Length: 432
View: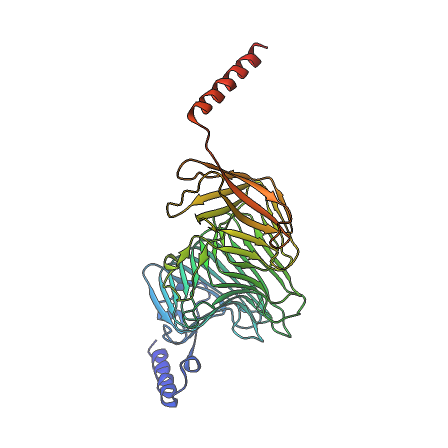
């Protein structure tokens, strides 16, 4: 034990004297326990507990961070080198990194397999990016079932960085804050290069993922990548733009749950069971946490190009009305040619005390064609209801428009009469 600490101290002196930059000066400290052990046990590492170093687990062992530990390191890397693997479990405590977290591989030309199971605790990346599957023969998986992970300063969360990356998030908060470049940080599925493909899969079934941007691919025109984002269950995706960079890849966005809050979506969207909400999020000041992200309840979602919108019987489109002419809008197709097919529910909500009068109208959806069969729910403060009708080929840009109209609530006497008629009809049917 004494030898390890002395050797590490000597290396630190040499590097300090050379005045190497912080990223380059990190000493590689390797996990030597072939089974399972805690991070803060010097006997599990070849040079003692890592400090501002590159902590690598590549021998098939498992490093554990629990609620008794507070860990600070430079890099945290699992599975370095083709054929090597590393595992980490975090059940509590706090992990702070000053550089990257790399799950599976650590170089653009390398490989390795890494798995990170994260069920509780706090991860704060004070610098660097979050990578899964970094290298053409690498594979990285994050299984997140709780806790909070913040990519604080870095701008990139790469799911498949030239390799294969998978994220399974069923709970917890993952925030790509990107304070070094506010408003431009991103989650990237399949971060491919011109000579290597990247494959990324993000399965968000619970908890919250917040990032200014979500990107499919990196280099343009590279076939062979498969990138899929699946939003299901109670998972919540908060973003502004969902874009496709590598159009030659197979890129898919599946929505069976939600909610989804976005501004621009560059893929066809089939909402079979979630809630699509045109709220406007402001990431420009890099708010400190997800709860602090400013939200304006009225906004526009544009499905760009020829991206169609299909809403199934179990899905919802949430529409907020804030004032006359100031309401949520879904613009399907943008300048392209796309259809909207609506079933399920249009859930209408008035905000800031707005109380539209009977006969008031609100245009809530544009598309080249609209199939409209949803149920409209929600009441005005005065108790009035809404109907949704399609105005075909509206003059303002030649597209169909879905319009909400405020309908007076039935008078109490009318409701009583309707109830009596229904009771009498039922009685006649029983006698028959």
